[in-house]
Image (cartoon, rainbow, N blue to C red):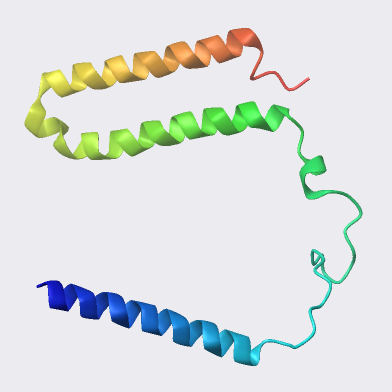
Length: 113
């Protein structure tokens, strides 16, 4: 068993070394200046400067609801087997999310101006 693992690790290291050697063999000798590519034109501003801070709140709300769906899909598969207790637990979970949305709304996170 240990021999098989040792052979597998050896194959992995050898293939990594071969790939690095091949990359070194085909890369250009001189390093070119690294600039962001914008359809052939140079960038006029920093990449981060284009995004307003209000998008942070929108991103956090999206992630919250995205995680909600990640929990609801498996729940939908087993809710018939688990019965009423699963429904009550999901409504509790949704109530906690609703409290979070109402808090964000009250604090003005959903206001655009």
